[in-house]
Length: 348
Image 1: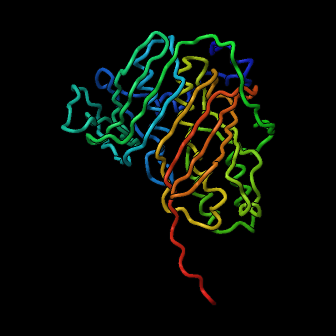
Image 2: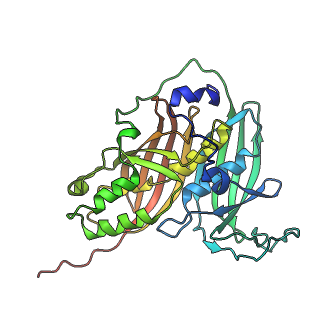
Image 3: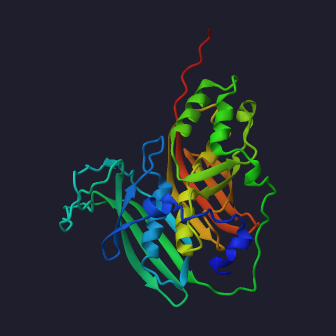
């Protein structure tokens, strides 16, 4: 495994002037320590579903796990389960900062009020140091809200080791991100099409109103006339907004964990969205395998496909490619997908 500092020439894309730190690093993935191996996170982005964003919970769990291992090991895999719905709780805004020691509440890790505006509390991340070996270390992380687990995760870390046996698939041939429309420009193009159905127009306006900390450029976006002929596949270039820098490879993996859940399960809906209206869609589990160093603030191609859907569930696979064609991360997820029942057709 090459060191992270070698990525500047390999992955492409220079750093922006100044230190415009990514909000994913400074806020979303910045955990507050409460005790040894116990942290608290906050929720900063509310998707249209009004549920906790799964990628944020995964990313925060990996941050917590990474704090308990040495500098010379890096995550190579994680396997997660979403076991309960996470609640969104508004934090009360105080007129001045609290300077007293935090006070624990029974069955809760929400320790104290702070002068935080427009932020939502997330959960406590509890880390169990399952094993620390010479080459591999395993950590178990449990996210807790109101004394009940809402998410569990096992992450495995490995010391860098040379390997003469290597292979990977080939990266798909696609236009570079610089030649594609930004997500905002693409949505605007769709909305200006007079043939666009109203249900798509409503959905696109909801997406446009969201402020997400990642940049996206869709490869081969369908025209409104092609929306009924979509396969369960999609590709888009993605990167974190702002600057992260070479820094610690662990943080780039945590940011990639956040990014990996965005629009992932929706891949399974693509062939069916014109026929059914999704009533409920939520992740059940999420797995990732990290293969090579990368920069999460540089463009990466996210290749997603859904090989199967049924039983009110959908399965998706994903691959994150560096711009130089190196396969950096593989992902898999299964989720619940329920559609609204269709009423009887009118004879009129």
